[in-house]
Length: 210
Image (cartoon, rainbow, N blue to C red; front, side):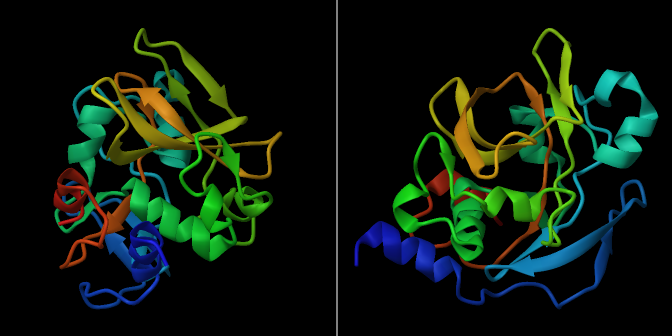
């Protein structure tokens, strides 16, 4: 078994975390989120809605923030989750995808992977993660994709100008993994911190999960 395979498999084992809870209320704004355990990690079941610098509601309408969460550029997304939580890393996403049935050999592909795993985590799907089609925003502030696309940052850099993200849409049944220019605004999904970094994570990914 390769070192990379071992790294992902280790993430499927239970990890040290804070005591179990049915939900979480962000003390900064008193907004409440559901919490679900997936692949040994505790994920919020809604997109983050905290008001952070340079974040935005889709079309600047507060009602969209209430339903869909806010949209954040990557540098802000890295810091937006509350204390004790962090923006999910690419490795943490891969652990979830493996648990959903995405074949191991497809996990690191820069493309749609794991049909029909994406159907399960859409808002209409059977899984508790339930990503809404919240859309996204260009660096120039043009809003696109509401009711069509869920675009979610990971904490993992692809290169100096880009970071990895995940994408779901109504015309695909898999989960798309690709690089996105960091100034674009996407959704944020927070994961509860674990005490030890997963094997195979980069230093920046490990730091993000603490």
